[in-house]
Image (cartoon, rainbow, N blue to C red; front, side, top):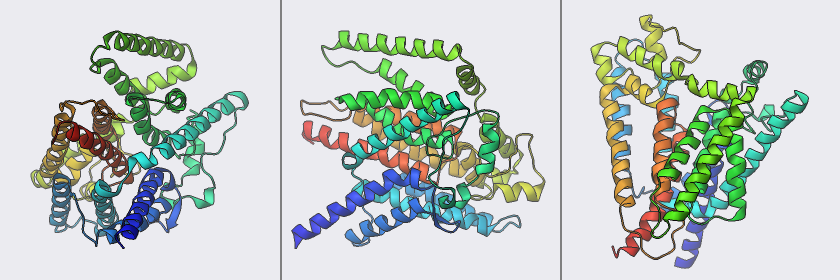
Length: 429
């Protein structure tokens, strides 16, 4: 009986892990109306199975994250007393907050990164190859290869082919089978980070690194290109292994030479100049960061402290006649840190910082643990790279309470657990 239960739990963990890896891609396709995507339905099914295998008890709860979520919800409920507040706008995001909160905490016991690692690398490679083909096809013919499997399958909140077609007339930006280059970059970047800093690599993994890097640059997504810069800097500054300083020196030289060649090629082409101009101009910095800070400065003292409520910035702005020159159609959208300031005020922002500082503290403690003689798949340096990328993405894009934050933090914590378990054994703890 125990054996069959163990096998059942193992299968559930595998299904749960697969659903997480596929989530960023399958989120783009319809599930139930405008409310749930196909990717979310799969995650909900595997989450329920995981809960059943644990007798509906959530283990290994991340308390600082839970506190941040609870603070955000309580502050939003306080704002319901105001006439501008929209309960409907709150409910959709609140449901996802609860769903992804469960998923993140369940993943601490059920997500098996080593099982889905090969699948993740292969998917990343395939998507990257297709993006390069999109670029070459447009370069040769001026046409566009599809960016989705079938338009009628698209998740309605994500479907906007007219906007994409209009944008392509001015600046073609390949995005593989993702609706935006930033979506592609977000899926690929964690994989590239892991591949770059993995201790032992196969030939296919080396090829994947090259192909994915080329694809990230061609996508022109600021997050992807800056992410590559972060990985390069960490690779250069990485502490060399004992008696391996000469090899580390040559690695640094090779990386710097490749970077210089890429910059030279980019500067000599129109497409490369467009990429560099996009990065130097901050991409969508004005709309995602500066606008949010301007609005926060216009809030009254109460809302500066407690926020305007989750997903209620737009109703607040319309009710009070607030606007900025950087406003776009979605007034709720801004970078995660700025969005937290507006949604949950200074109190919620401090709760978020405490959660992130706790994550950083645990990472540093693990990094400083002595590594023994046992084989270890991932160097602890990969955690630093992923954490820096997480902070950068949160500083630039709106990912909290979404599948994107869930995806990134689950991969981060899975690698953290893998390294921690090996290091603690090596140190006799």
